[in-house]
Image 1: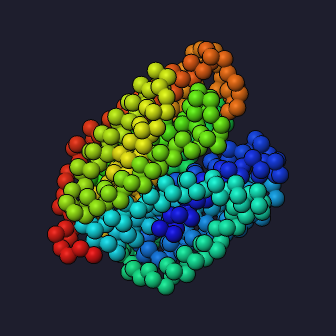
Image 2: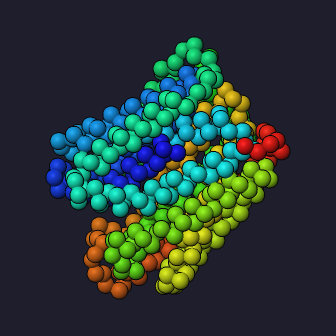
Image 3: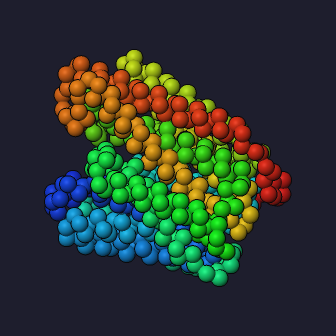
Length: 467
């Protein structure tokens, strides 16, 4: 939990300090890369951490991830220009890419499936709490000290976590460590990174059809095909092909991808809706999304206890996705009909509560269905598909919004927060954002339909004495 808090706090705390960072270092053109470099690096390295944890054990990989993250944090605080900061943020991301999968793998190692839901239910709570505290702490630290300290603050917290884990975590190596699949690792990381660059920067930083997009797309396709051929020819591949023979893993990955495609693709426009359409200040718009975090904080532990008590991981997820689908539908209707906070805020709360029932329970379901030798890479790949779905959602919803605005002769860049817009322009934004929320409802509905086909396997150890 300390590791997850460190990662979640870093992501939310940096955003608050970005204006101050740009004012001091310059390089406005590279502003988005401060966030993008971190996200790309962390997402691309997730599967690799899982496989190496299966081969060499959990402790070495946790220490490697923490070392990279803390080194990157220290260097970010020392950065003298925007180029250095972007490079060091990528190093931070390489370390942070191991936090989520490794934490979930270790929980699976030390907690039996029947009791695991209670602990997994804390994972969304940690990220919800840090997403609330991060902006506040970021503002306080930046004002009282300087933006450098939003990175330095990671060092004592990380050192304490490092010490505790070194003293208390004792897990054995779970797989053969005969050799490292260097070629497979390069192919997988290169193909994933190239594909993520296309998804994250296509149509924004890089024009579609431009040379960088074309090169990245070719590398992603060629690397992916080469990897698919390679993993079937080596004895210990970085991505075991038999992992995709597991039905629970396959369906679980699709459900998580669809869920986060809808969640991230829609929730990223909450601030835009509150500020441009509802006319509230940036500070107040941040408070308006706290309802979703509160819903998640309440439902995640309850879902974990439900799983531990009944041994059923499918029912709470069906309930959760149904609630999320209804919430998105209400948001789409409410936004289109100019409904007030009395409609919008309960729907946002319901969205968080629904999603809180899905994430920890699906992780337990997949881990329960995988053999021990595949638990690490399977957990990491599930986390990767979740992140990939979120990135696809953001890209797709951004394209939907841009298309709707372009159809009315508007540009998204012309409407900055704090700008007073004509009523006709506000109406266009209102309908465009309502369409994005409707798209979120469709994505979650597809995830719900997929979930119905998920096998319900008995949880190992259910019915035994509770921890």
